[in-house]
Structure formats: structure tokens, C-alpha cells
Image 1 (spheres, rainbow, N blue to C red):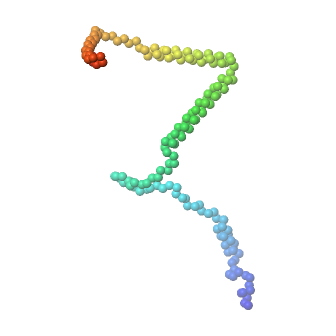
Image 2 (image 1 turned 45 degrees about the horizontal axis):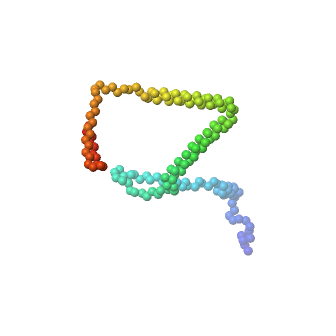
Image 3 (image 1 turned 60 degrees about the horizontal axis):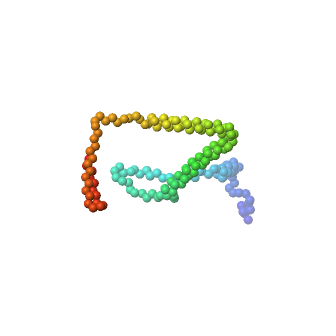
Length: 166
């Protein structure tokens, strides 16, 4: 057997500096952060020029709506009405809760206040209605005469023809 077959040494052998440099390169390659993936386009803008005169070519456009427009409108209106009713109900609840914690004297005072407001509203309404009723008299300078002449033609019991001349 030859000497090269029994040897356990690596051939060709690297120097320590070259081995360290190669180890550093391998470690850097393994632990190098991966480059971010290329961005995937989520939209497309057609950059072709539109014709200056005439119509563009028709393009099919899918309708992505799932719900008909009338149903969506009804749903939005229902939500609005429900929210408004809830707000009004909460307001009424707060007012009644406040009234329930009042004493008899304060209820009488609130009644006086409300009756005072009612009297003020009635007096303002009466003033407006009298102000709207203007004092305008129609003064005619000439005599007014009205001549009415009626001609009646009767034939039997049920056939009567009245003609008015004015």
C-alpha cells in the first residue's frame, strides 16, 4: 500500500487563515437575512391613452355587489331609525328618572313652570294670529249691480232645462 492511501490528512490542506475566512463566509451566508419578497401588485392602472374623439372600447366590468341597492338602503334606514328611537327613549328615561326622584314641592314648582311656559306660548300664538289678521277693507268706488236672468224650459215632470244669463 502506498503512503497516500493510509493517510488521514486532508489533501490539499488549507491554511488556518483561509479556513477561518471560509468559515466566516459560510456563517455569513447562513445567517444573512433573506431579501424581502418582491411586492405583489394589488391593483392595475391602465396607462393606455383614451381616444381623443369617439368612444372607448367596451370593457366588461363585474358587479361585485352582493345585496341589491334597495335592500342596502332599507338596512341603513332601519339602523338610523333604531338609533334615533334609542336616543329618544334614553332621553325620556332620563327625564322620567329625574321626575321620579323629585319631592312633591318640586313637582308643584315644575308644574308652575310648565304652566307659565304654556301661557307664554299661548300669548305669543295669539299675538301672531292677530298680527296676521290685517285690517283691510275693500272700498268700492262705484255701484255694484248684478243682473241675473234665468230662462226655464220644462217638458213633462222630469225634463227641466235652466239657462242662466249673466
